[in-house]
Length: 294
Image (tube, rainbow, N blue to C red; front, side, top):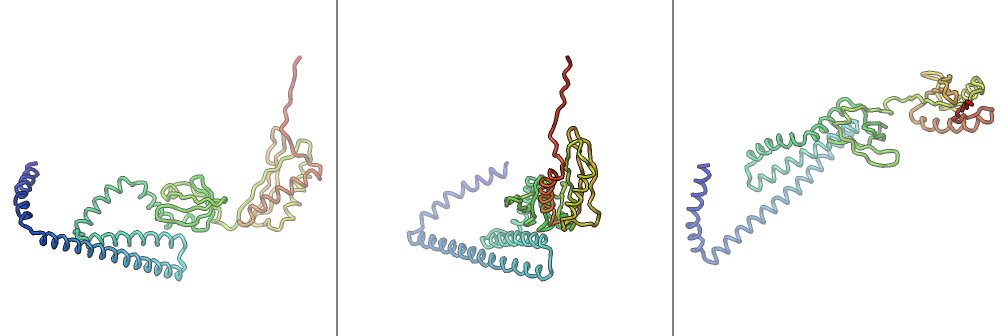
């Protein structure tokens, strides 16, 4: 407190001398000082503009070089997009430090201030840092890659891009969803594209009194007519799954390629709907039995 008061006293004592010196200046002197100051400011602005322009140009060239090198090495698209985003951020930070040095600020003290401020900002932006760490974990362990169809955080879609903090997912209705990497890396991820084959499960119901063996034979015939259904890793499976309140539920399981999953799903449902009535198999309706006691 004493040092602060002493500083105020020193400044106050220097003011009369400053006003005295200023009063001795002629109009020409004031004009020359103002002109020199304007020239210095203009030169600084031009230097900053040139450094910014050249720096951004060099940054874009460097990013292009990185991109070409990773393409030649056949680097995974996920890693490629992440590295390019990280390099772009680093280039921007270096460019800002260079511009601050040109302005005249001591860069060493600026870097120290930036580091100390980074600690405080890091504590405030813990969620953002968690997303950054999540992005690194995704690239290291690769639970999914660009182009995979995944389900994470309640969102299903194709992975378009893995960025530093977020993962871009395109949904089936062409919406772009940004999933934070932190929750994605620590949550449950369902990757439908990881394996080339997939099992397709159905439940078809018939009414009580209908012939189950006949329904089973019809289903096996319809399945055999579809050439997309695979016999490996397991043959098509048809069994009586459950006896419901108003129906006999038949469980059907078939294996297919990933790209044939939805086509078989829609086509077999349609065939069963058209074929069962022709074979004398009835689709059940929910029924109630009412007993009246006199």
